[in-house]
Length: 307
Image (tube, rainbow, N blue to C red; front, top):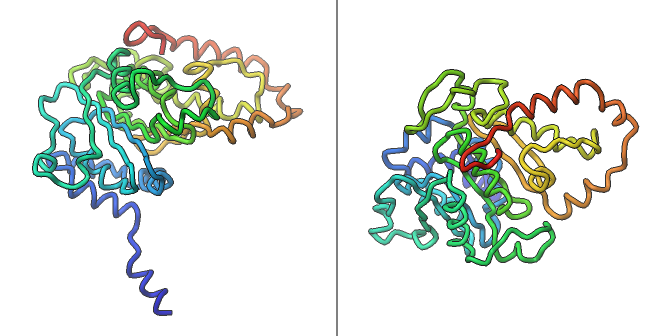
């Protein structure tokens, strides 16, 4: 009985723990971060990665570096590495790190523009070496050496940038890893406005499948993850054939999108699902309408890449 009582006293709610870490570390950005209430979703979905050794996290949008330091405290297991990409900030070396605080050795900051393929590839090279290329299969042993376990896009929040960055970096996610997009409100802007100086909203708005609506593109992944059981001959492509086939799960929380990559075991298991009798009824007029809907949104995006 005494041990049970002690365990109750020692228990810390995971969401409250993360909230406290943000509260201690986020500096002048504290209020904005805490108001989002993202700690509930992060505590739930990042919990499996906290117990792993050698976790590698990347956050796009390092800004002053406070959130990177918070993640360095959150991921305490040996070998954890925290990477951040900053843009337009002259100094992201955190005051804590200049003072020699613990965990700073985990943190690495790389300058670059998330709308530039060259900069994103330089970021990956800085983390894993110039020779690293995403292995062609999820079962490849090279994933043990390199690749991100968690990627968080808290960058410009421009929908076209979000889609472009996902297309470039999701292939660099390790099997079983999770990709997170924060602050998706600009996907719903249906009149021109700006996000950090970038024009958005001129083609966006709820339900519109354009490069100004990242949320709509991620919603389409729901049909992709149902393909193995419900629609095995579905021939649509949302991001790329390789990316679509690698997506295991997608989830939406207020302001957040989570996309998980399959493990090799999940990929093999889902590929073995037998064709079900009702799938033959899915290939009709609705499918053709849906294809036209998707095609209408495939405009040339940032860097001339179709996103």
